[in-house]
Amino acid sequence: MSMYESSLKCPKCSKIIPEEEFITKNCGCGFRLRINFNYEKLKEKVSQKMLQKRPFSHWRYREFFPIRSYQNIINLGEGGTPLLQSRRLGKEKFGLKNLFFKVETGNPSGSFKDRPISVGVSKGVELGAEVLTAASSGNAAAALATYGARAGKKVIVFVPEHVSEGKLSQLAYLGATVIRVKEEVEGQDPSVTLFQKAYETFKWMPSPSFGPFNPFQFEGTKSLGFELCEQFDWEPPDWVFFATGSGGLLAGTHRGFREFEELDFIHSIPHHIAVQPDECAPIVKGVLKKLSPLKFQDWEKSPHTVAGGLADPHPWDADSALAAIYDSSGTAVAVSEEAILRTQRWLAQYEGIFGEPSGTAGLAGLEQLVESGKVDQSDRVVIPITGVGFKDPKVLLKQISMPPPISPDISELQSILIDNVRS
Image (spheres, rainbow, N blue to C red):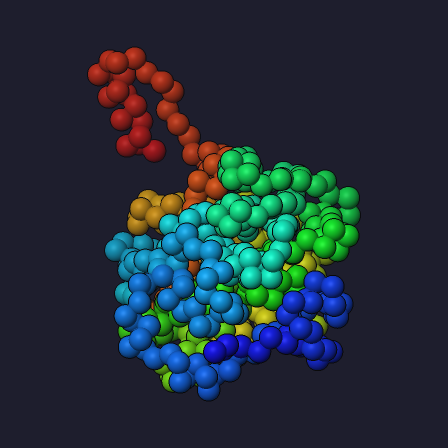
């Protein structure tokens, strides 16, 4: 019994498109087609007790994903990530009693992108796709290459010219064809431009983690919200701070909370906070201007930020993200490069959690709202740590100084130890 309707609907023009024709009959409005789930059927099929009998993982929630036959699922053990309460950072830097980290770095490809991409690749198998393609700054491409390899599918990814070497090497070893694309127009992502031309020309299955190109993958991100509901014993936290680029993580997690509320599993949802770098903050701009979700605006210059995964001048999921922020009585904040790097370092040194700048930027947003008094000391706050620090080693090496090599001599060692104490 299918839990969702096979016809997809545009939120702007209301055009209905059969799921198997979503590539060739896209309405062209530029928004993600919506998938409608039958909540009455879900209520009959799914219960809290039933879910808790299954392994704690992403596919524990399989009825909530748009997959018709579970035989098509491509699974590498994604999801089921730990929720860790802060031991030191919350109290010593923020004065918070209940700060938690949802640590996504242990997913198979090292980021939260495995949640949406696992659903997208599974749907690609179900629809008989031969080639899967995406544009990405790195993490979504790595996830697509990972699950594409598992599924035995050809993967072609388009990345910006200056993507990190760590992410490039991961893609190459996973067998993906990697196309680096030069920027030609200020404020436009060239990898997205060529990706669009390529999939439309060759009829490949578009599988980026954002926007209108693949409506199925968005649904996979819901599992982060589902897991938080369970990990907080069905009483969701007060705040979730999302490092935000396109907006898909925030919007997808919000949909997860709302669906569990629809099934009466929970009775409140957290305030959703979008955190973006000062260098690229179109969703923050939209919130400050109180823009309608379907009338969001692009960032008009090319971003240059240490949080490369958040550099989305055209946030493809901004409509969904803005709607989620408004619905949750949340907000959005822009943070400095220095604040991103400082709080990333705090997370590593105070908690032993090693995230990339794009994955830890939510902490910089928390710092800002704590200082302004919006977050109370007793509030329960969650920061998703969305990507592992090994993804971008060059950025990290620029922030630290290493002592020179020394002889195996105790006096030289003592000299270095004294210098470290002084610094």
